[in-house]
Length: 286
View (cartoon, rainbow, N blue to C red):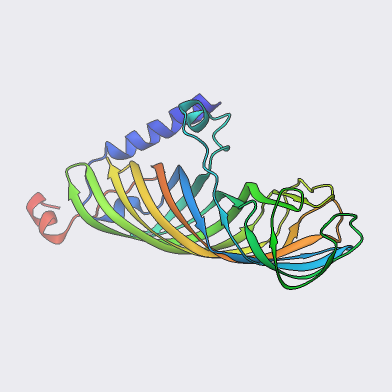
């Protein structure tokens, strides 16, 4: 099935490119594009508020980082394991020569740095651990027996975007341009949390929402295939992060993120030839 889908896509894109060069972006209107690629991500420090039957406390200015998978072709290029690394997938539709709307997902990984020292406010009681107590602007380290906090399966951001494209240069069958857009979506992480002696929750859960903006540089070949590098940033708000198997336990956090993406894609579908100008019509007798 994968071979059949790839063959169909290849035939469609070659059919489009075989119709000859266009003088403007009208050749894209009505077409669909898809892309797949990979990202690196950064995150601002955030406050994380934990609530449950045995605790109600806030950790302030918590540092976190991404977790890229070491590169090897078997992991990154195999359909079986392609979703293990931090990845980006998107499918879009060109509804105007320079405008498209798309849906996709950004799969990032978010890992709280272990053993860092942060401020804590609130209370912990009845856990039977050394962390029981009342805290007011106190320092606390984050060893594994207190907290392990990761969105590593991952920090999933399914979103809708609207983008605008602008050509910079066309040389033969190669077109270079920029794209910029805005988007919004939901956060659907599978959060891995070990909080003191509680059993962790290990399920995907709708935790919140996000908004984002993106700008990219695209190199397109034969009006059909492209490679694109993107800088993307946005704001994430997650008021309902599942932390343990108890529905009473949850975490709340918000932060800004940044991504650098490298994606590969293709356009296919209906192709339009450019409309001849008045001068061209006279010369050809049309």
